Length: 250
Ligand code: 6PG
Image (cartoon, rainbow, N blue to C red; front, side, top):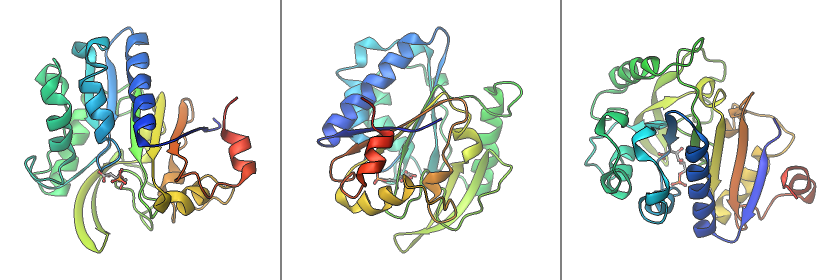
């Protein structure tokens, strides 16, 4: 399906829009609502908004929270995506503990990945071996990575979850990530990207030049779901007009 591109003034407006998508989709969903969160700096305001302004609008007991990836650090570590979401969101909403399905970053990557794939199997949407997420949030690194799918990582994979040993910002990083098999079966994938440092990569990712080895964000293409890019005007700064015309709605 063709991606939708929505351009906002700043990250605050992106976050408000992303939070409203969450509550709207959750209200529509008759049964349980399966969401995968991302880490990094971009979603922190979204988490705060969900915990405050949107707190009352969501029936939290039916929401199940997963993660698209995790760094292999303990939950107390500043790099833990679970720790960040717990502090900003999960500790502030009435969500049952049994609805929180984190990747255990305190384990080594292979073990954590194995454990997480078992959790995903428990929520699998037949005939898949993993759930069809109702909503997935993703970020994009300046190098075009998304979740922990880094440039140069294998594109043709058969696994839903992978242990990753990557070098990111010159530091080795042990991680666990979902792969595009899972993201591409979701009902809705929402990318959020802000800041001019992401502008040239965003222009490549949304261009007709398909290079998923170099730009893993291009691997995300839900076959039977919506792909929505929420970006600020700085991140959109290098997009040629033909791209904004092609993907912007209205
Ligand atoms: C993480 C995610 C990663 C992130 C991008 C963007 O770091 O937890 O795995 O894919 O979404 O690196 O990060 P920022 O939001 O910090 O720019």
